Amino acid sequence: MVTIIKDEELKRIPGSVKPDSKKRVVLPAFLVREDIIYHIYCNSAGQIVLDPQVTIPASEAWLFKNPAAIAAVRRGLADAAKGKVSKINLKTL
Image (cartoon, rainbow, N blue to C red; front, side):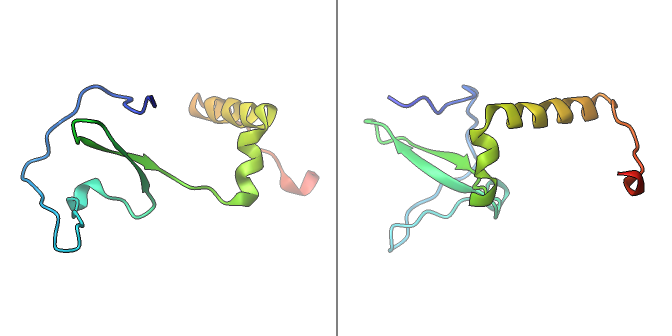
């Protein structure tokens, strides 16, 4: 079994949808972003869950496979969020 539910607080979206003649279901515009793709899951009760995903360029995949590099990026982002930043003169590098 795959665990994909990250928030148990599901909200019913107003209205209903019905598959069209080509068995497509149109989602409300406010739920859809152009940069998102969805993994689709279905249970034995026929319930369908769309799990939003993003893709990254293959040239950037190395970062997520390198624990030390991704940890350094996360530390840097955390520092920046706390205001721990400093200015450097690029001409002196």
